[in-house]
Amino acid sequence: MCSKPQEEKAPISPEPKEIAERVERAEVKVDAVWSVYLIRTAANQLYCGVTTDVARRFSEHQSKPQGAKYLKGKGP
Image (cartoon, rainbow, N blue to C red; front, side, top):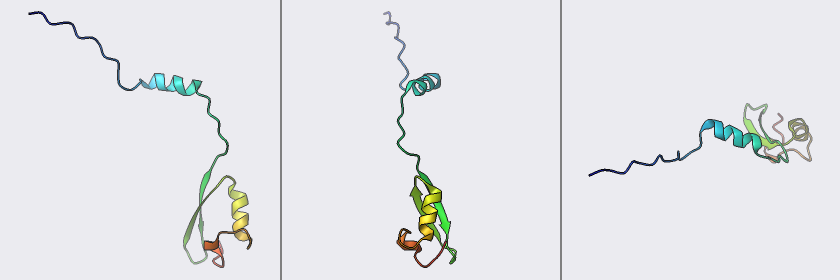
């Protein structure tokens, strides 16, 4: 009884080289780069925020009308 030669199966996931080639060809549209930031308050508490402009957002935290409610009166 002869057995059939087994066919070579394709790998389930692509090889790293193939992945790199796909990434190089991919067109990615980035609307904005987001940053996560931490502010330590005068009371030694940490506030975590997310923004597209850290300098602007920190300035807003220091001003009363636009800062986060959590930081009101705690001062970064």
